[in-house]
Image (cartoon, rainbow, N blue to C red; front, side, top):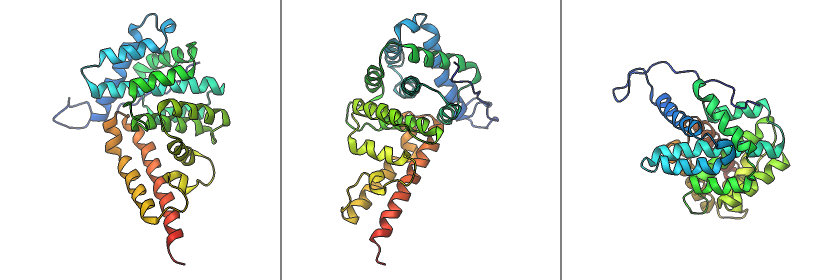
Length: 268
């Protein structure tokens, strides 16, 4: 099965003195990431046997001198590998899930084969998803609990999981276990789950606050979440530009949750 079948349309040229005249910033960044990822997968003749563990080590070694590029490649590897494992646990890959993946990543046409290869390696690898989650935590994580980049990965996986209209029970179990391995606390996981759950979200869970908290505490938490999820911060963490759309939806859910709570505190 070819999961990554959509193509990437090159943007129109944008004049910018810091770059080649026919290479917009976002396009160049995407090409750099996918070219590098393609080089990794293409160079690993034994990749199907070695599995993702060897690719993880290759990323660590190849980009040790370029932390920013390493973060971006690492994020891409983590999302592709764990998407494959989630699909395997669920047993089916829907067209909606494929579309959702491409809302996170715009894969250049010439690199689609290498991305598919990485996806297939992950799906065929005998290592279980828990081993993958540990590898990805080591590749992308800061070593601290509630690492923001690992939360970004989990949020991306939720975005794919809910593409068919609902996050299924098996997918929630998969994502909950991944969150545990990532060192994401239960309160944080429940907040992510609440944002992506079908139906009306519990605003207190979305903000990660307890019912009965003083309004000042809730407001401070809200402001902190909005600041942490500013698009500039996500780009600095190494997520692809396309992910900003998901971050925008995240902030919208946070704003909506706060507005519901705020109305409850206002006098009738």
